[in-house]
Length: 165
Image (cartoon, rainbow, N blue to C red; front, top):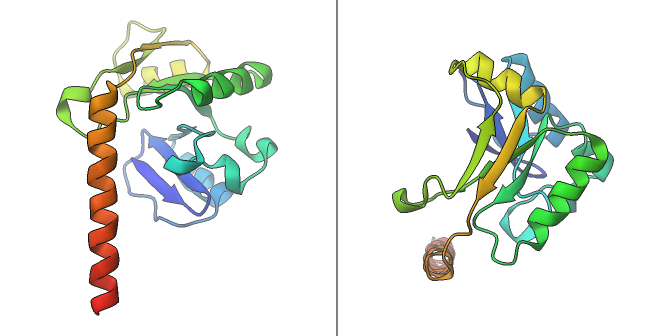
């Protein structure tokens, strides 16, 4: 589940119940862990896409269970490199994500886990233990721009609807 906490997005892996949105960052992580889940911070250095770094300190970011170091929807790759350096310096497990909002983009980025056992627990344990490698390719720019335009159109439409109420 992708949770929008007060600081930005957090991925909740291995949970059974939804985490309420808009909680403080640390409380969101606590709620994920209470269910035995993992709290992964996606695209932490990308403020325009609800990365958390703008709203928390780097010390707080280091309390996550893992950091997404490769996100296929980042156009330049700069934020991915920042995230990887951050995770390596702090010894944090690393993940990748395609951040797919349409079916054709699923699998653009992949987290390979160092286990042959394909259970949820084994996969979560491999991530916790940092037994991961990441690989991927960037989302083609034409798709990223098409999705950005659709998002902008929705925001304008919703803004106009709010004004009319």
